[in-house]
Length: 427
Image (tube, rainbow, N blue to C red; front, side, top):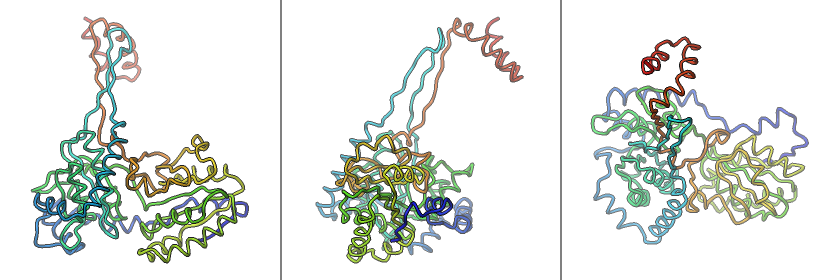
């Protein structure tokens, strides 16, 4: 990993560190656009064509059968099922607290306003299955969807050897997913966004994916025939703030746990201790050799770095500008910095809070804003699967009370019809 010193950086160099590894959006869009266009025009025939082309899947229905679901549950080792069950309980417990409550009040005598929440009726979940199988993502998306009360929960995940991973299917069953399709990539996004002659479209799509999935989500979200999406997304990332009290083996393990996600992931360490930085570099080199995904992690580390700062306040300032997906605070007193953290997807406090627990089972959601979007987006939560509706009811006296205000404002905007809709009721 590169080791840099904040005091030796020029302004432009500092700003360059805030940038993520580049994604060729223009190229991704050019590849994805014809795929989405074909699915809009040709339906399931196009989806099947791309599943065969990209996932080598042919000769079977994309919809996973009830028998396949039952078989997956039966063949999955009990240890894995118990782990999934524990994670489901924790995620459910945490997300239950997010279910919103409506309210009603009088803004002035005779004018009653209220707000109520409704579930999005049909949602689509994208579960990656490329370089890693992610039953955890199934849990992170399906549980808040179920708690929100979505009537139809559809999941798509690419096939491996003609099937979805048994752990993914078991998690889907436990979490109440209604339909699972063996489709990945842009074709899965297109199928959910536009529907086909045998699959109804969804109202909103959730879930992470590679640059082509991200491009497809972006495109369907701006297409009037498409659907909404959860958030823009980029490659996964972690930023660690550590002082001299941190164990270098812990820090190195956290950096590598993120680096193994993908070659375009980024791992950053900010520290006030140059001694810790040197020890972490040695630990990274040592632990890297033990990873099965060593090639992926090694490539990711090429765009990762360690930055030596003069103070922890400089670390917090950089972190807030970077707005990391995952932020680990491994310092002597991590709790005292809560108010200093403005922009982050999910925060892990203390030496014994590795990012891995949030990825799997602590209860918080791991579908988080990346690429700096933590400045304006939250991680996925129950509210994302809902929308609110406002209501108002006026008595005759209430309308008389507010009439002058409404008529004056309507006439100020030269909207006579608006004013007349009030006046006719006063006569």
